[in-house]
Length: 157
Image 1 (cartoon, one colour):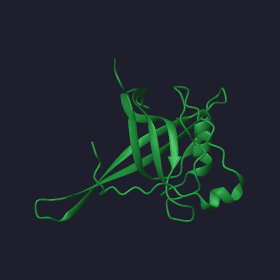
Image 2 (cartoon, helix red, strand yellow; image 1 turned 30 degrees about the vertical axis):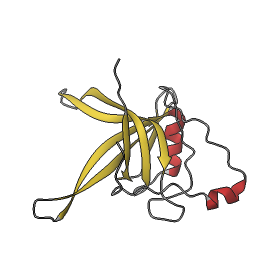
Image 3 (cartoon, helix red, strand yellow; image 1 turned 120 degrees about the vertical axis):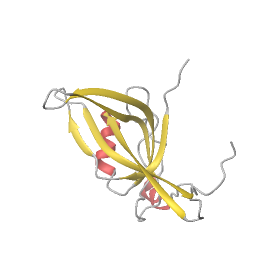
């Protein structure tokens, strides 16, 4: 048995690029920044940012293209993949990326990086987002609050 699962919470580095394959399948690409905060030997707070390439397919790609924008905070769940391609000179190149199968917008409506609850949900290996839980009326979206996440909280595992 093996497991290939990636979970990230970070901010978009740029707006998603939504394209369609010749057969009409939607694909969205965007970069996601995760930042780790730590104290160095002198007790100074340091930040280390890691950039991740994210790829979403089909319905999830269309949702990302419509609702996500630079700076938005999101939860991404997917799998790590490496693909091989050739540059213009015929040299083999490799790209490592996360193929997303779940996306959740984080933050509150009106906040920088926040927004209304995401219609993205758990998908299978096909990359589709599941139907979100039903919310009654537009007012429910306005009053919905995401659970708060504090990276300084201790995780009990």
